[in-house]
Image (cartoon, rainbow, N blue to C red):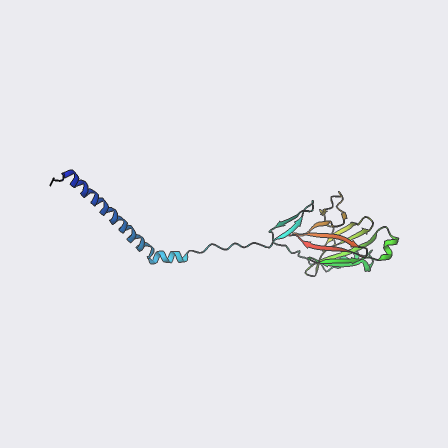
Length: 216
């Protein structure tokens, strides 16, 4: 038989040695990993790590911009804090017939009934006085007159809970006059930190409807 050369013998021994070292290293790494993750210190640290807080969405609200487009926001609704005893309303509504006075709560619809006799004899109806409430407490008021032929609501004044004039209100009629509110349009105004939307609708000859919403 031919003899193996010394180089071949050394090469075979070297390959066996390399394989033995790799197997030993893999076994060592496995042993270290097992010891590490079974350590009481590591387990206690993992258990103490808090889970990330769950995300919650605040209540959403909708608003109507000047073009009549409804926009949705995620701002929580504000409350209008008021200490008014409503005593100023007596003077504010002094020139208005008691039959044309009413009130509306935030989130409600209100029907204002009209006299059929007035339709035939008058160019416009009113004035009407409407008290605004939130949780049963007065937060503001306004007065309007109504032109049935053109279905136009004309705002004559709007005040806060102390019967002080509100400034900076607007409507979605695009008429150029913030006091001229066309049918199915919205009056937008602010009381304290809260913003409100009042929609005006005239559908039948015996009444018109007010829809009162809070935007934020």
